[in-house]
Amino acid sequence: SGDELKDQYYEECAHMANRIKSMRNLLVDKLKEAGSTHDWSHVTEQIGMFAFTGMNSDMCDELTSEYAIFLTRDGRISLAGLNDNNVEYVAKAIHSVTDGKSITTSS
Image (cartoon, rainbow, N blue to C red; front, side, top):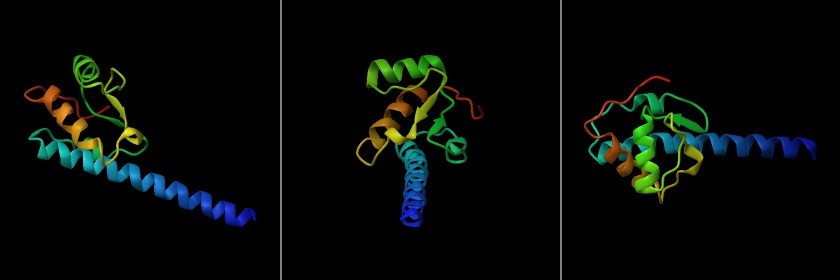
């Protein structure tokens, strides 16, 4: 029925939103575990399917060329592409290209 489909839709939306929020938090946790000393709170404070990382275009280019991680050159990354199997790899790669360099903490 229409009400059942509506309920299912909202349940699935909530599940998707919770997963993306979980990936935000896990990415920041894995960045810290990798040794990053940057303040990544701007990532966890955002909402939506994308995260502004604060990386510059050179960092983004290095992520793509050296680690096959694709993101926009302004530092926005799709959180929907993260999962439990790749988030540590992504975090270590981000740490590798940002270590000892400054990032922007606001979009």
